[in-house]
Image (cartoon, rainbow, N blue to C red):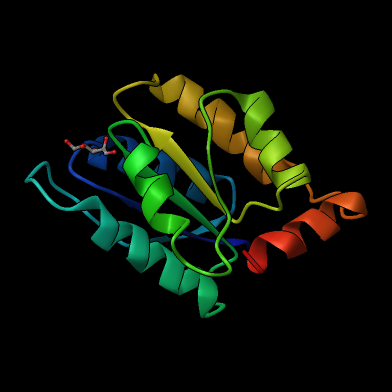
Length: 145
Ligand code: RB5
């Protein structure tokens, strides 16, 4: 298992991002750190785009985006055709966004979640599989909106 994950945050999340990269690397994932790495103010759409590019080019299978709430990152990521970003605040939603939405990006809030919760949510997301079937039809519809 060597899934490649592109991961980025804005200035609200570099500490969570660093710790999550350490956690995922220890579990055997390869993480592409797309920044930012300091708390100097940056613009989240730039970092969402960097991660989406890695997925759309095939260099990464999944993306993780962290900002203050996760909301801005999810809005930015979902502007990209082929990206399905789920904003999650609990592990159940994280598993379901893989199973039902075939989400390829997980968005979380560094200012709204504990790091322990971020880890739980990430584990649930990466541990779930897309169920296909009727969900595939709906995912196909998303691409045509
Ligand atoms: C940055 O202050 C904040 O707006 C950003 O991290 C995010 O929460 C936006 O949705």
